[in-house]
Image (cartoon, rainbow, N blue to C red; front, top):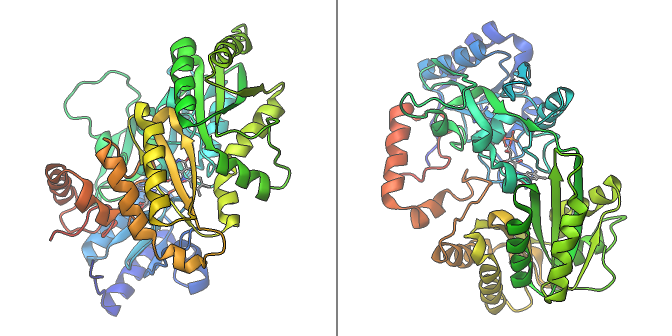
Length: 479
Ligand SMILES: Cc1cc2nc3c(=O)[nH]c(=O)nc-3n(C[C@H](O)[C@H](O)[C@H](O)COP(=O)(O)OP(=O)(O)OC[C@H]3O[C@@H](n4cnc5c(N)ncnc54)[C@H](O)[C@@H]3O)c2cc1C
């Protein structure tokens, strides 16, 4: 998308207005101060911006948006900048960093809700819930730096979706600054409210293109009193899926995590992550990491898990398994799974996919996509892992041994096409949890239903007629 040219006098006028309201310390223009806001961690995009504004209240966010509207300057909301699709990278305009909106406004343990500002770090929200003996279940490896506003704007997933749902499912109410500077106060803590359109869902997952989320009422849950973690070896992905179906049927709601690791992903972790140990004696075709948890301290989770695993062993569905004997052992098993991206980076170039298919087709997808990639580039190494219980696989590809890294990465687009075509043909999605941002924007043209794309454009036009909110993200420019 062609970048909007902002005349120097307009920039100066805007900066003077913002500085008067926010103070010098919160309008950054020095290159060194702005640098962390202009790039993203994968190094795929380098952005540029007129300045970075750091409002500290909802009223200040509204002021900033109104000032941008008056001056015709686009703006990019930014949370922890941990997004993986380039959504928070500015392409000109103003970065609106939400980090200073970091108050926990209210905790209501009886309503099982917490009201937080958008700039709260996810981990701080989890801790605030914990202090009143409740659980806020959204959990992802970036939780120490991502912000709840970013989580909601990307409809983040993570490792607890199987039982608790993704970010969208955890929200009761929102406060949003609209493109015209008005504040929509939708901070409802109601679980039942059928008074017309459910507006919060417009903003959840909209990646900053329809409004700036400034606060949210989030659902809390009873805190688990015990958990049981197991690591299981199977012959392949089909057996992992069979085990999942058995466990879900037998354990129901206490099955709170079910993750997949291919043999190669465990091999990489064992090779590259200091202290990582293979939890099972032999090597197997595929692995499952399982977590059962319950708020009932008397629930016999170990017994239930052992019963299902025992039968699965007898039936040849699994080959080997180990149950964590302590919380520390359980955490060590989880670390194996969480270390896969880092281990993959250390192995060399990787081409990533965050796709989903119906859960029942996950194994078939892995098989088909692996065969297609191996045929396209002999020696390519498939590093598939992820949230198999949600049908969400991070179908990542590691460069063939000895291949030049850049030569491999130049094939990113071609492999995306191959893998995305297969996922979509199987009723799947090209973005399960990371969003669209810049990275997958053009893919929407190919894969999104044209009527849906048209409706998305209609909403964008209605809510942001000047096109100032995070322009160039999510929606591909009209032909
Ligand atoms: C190690 C690691 C592990 C990860 N694991 C997962 C995972 O398991 N599941 C998963 O879903 N994601 C995962 N991610 C991706 C990322 O953490 C999530 O997308 C997260 O929700 C982004 O939050 P953030 O605050 O960093 O947002 P940012 O990166 O700052 O922004 C993301 C998008 O949201 C918009 N935005 C930010 N704040 C607001 C706001 N207040 N109002 C409106 N729009 C806003 C931005 O403009 C941008 O488009 C991972 C990332 C890393 C680095």
